[in-house]
Length: 405
Image 1: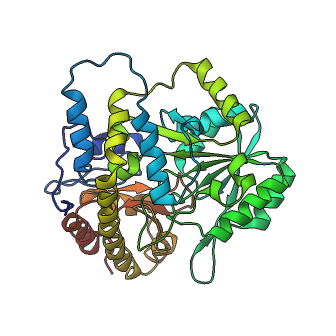
Image 2: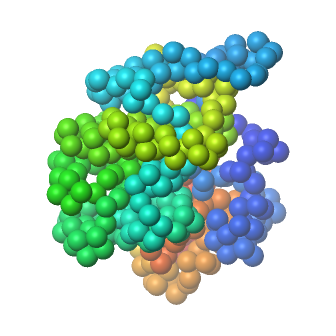
């Protein structure tokens, strides 16, 4: 029904994903002395941005708004709130969501920063799981909070799990009262089961820990996995959680800027509103509003369902490839379009460094991401959200030039 096969050529179209020189210079892909060999084009597989055109319903909504050539001050349309309420009900089974529970955020990271300002004092400890999304690391460090990591562990079946005993010990020792929870988890791609969220939220309740739940990936679900909103597992969870969402990862809209929070607790909502009023930074773009309305409808929902089928197949191809690479360890993602690889054993076996492995991929145009900022000593984060033909080409380059016997 929708086209997920064409290559969107964004070179020169202000796309960070395709700007290899800039990504290398910043160290996002690994050592800053890397280069792409002549004869290889770029296949962007690093930043969490898809190489697919957005949904046709989004494009139509933007065209309709742009055709009215006035872009002055504006009010939030009722359709904006209705679209979010309907989307959350259809996709996540959320009932009772009202416009007053919804607040605009310039981004999930900005929303997390505002919530932390409302809940914490500078120097406070904040609990996160590791591997940790690098954006949270930057926000916490930049705002003067102390990061306390509770490592996720892989069980006998290789599934990433929370270590509840470790979480509780660190909460008690650090006198922690704020935590960032990532659901689905980035970078591991774990989609938490209800019992896991219930147990985590009961632990947070017992120690009076408020929760900032990043659920930006909640629409990207692979192989029929189901997202459970953190606020849905209990009444206490509903009242102690700031949930953050956005259509950006799902619909390739990061450049338009536009996230939103769901806060049911009126005291907490007032506190965050107060923080954001003082900053004067948190104003929505009129095109962002119309893009969300175009995305969060029946056609957008059908587009996402088809997208998830495409991404599930892409992830299958990538995982089957790396299962054939001795020494490349990973858990199959259940959500997101990112694959988190631990290449420590491969590097040890081949007496090479992770820097040289990263260089080898980039040399043949596979722009993959240095994963060490997320966690681990020899990790790589890999984006599979691109047309299948391009993914197969990237894997063939890795097979031929990088992961050789």
